[in-house]
Length: 90
Image (spheres, rainbow, N blue to C red):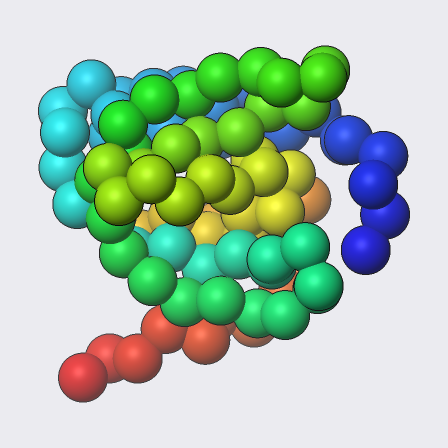
């Protein structure tokens, strides 16, 4: 996966900020650094910038690059608008 950071859509960032402020658990779909699809959930602890790259840190301590996010809950990241939803309706 490219290491060049691609800034995310401002409206999507607002969704992340709202979830962090509300301290609510969110369902996540994202790519890790090896370009593997990851599904999970957690509470967003903080949003931060390191070396000009935006990240979110979950309460668990896991850090996720914001441009690797595919979906948070039912909100599709604009950069992945054509990407299928792999969440389980179980």
